[in-house]
Length: 114
Image (cartoon, rainbow, N blue to C red; front, side):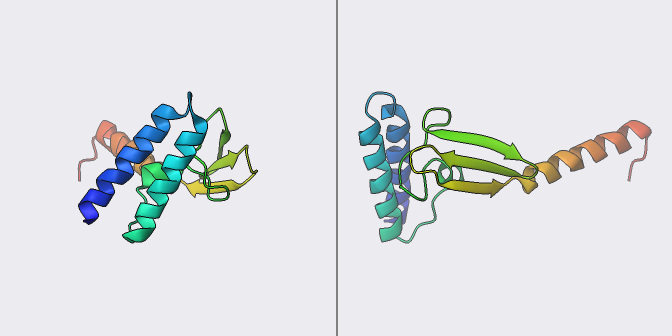
């Protein structure tokens, strides 16, 4: 049951993304349906879809059309242009991996093999 619910979440969000340009209300409805499925089966929303709907008005967000995305120091700020809700998501993990790669490449270039 949980596997089927996960598949449905994926399908609904992909449909919401595809339908947004022609039928925005339909894409908002798909997000509502996906959220209700996730709540019913007590599923955690996948991280790559978590920032694609507004936590305030529960609408699908298409970056550049009905939402504004900004990078602030170590967080991504997403502002819904429909209700004004602002959500922030940290991206420290990405910064740490980038820093590690840079350090590893420096030690490799210097010849310090550990």
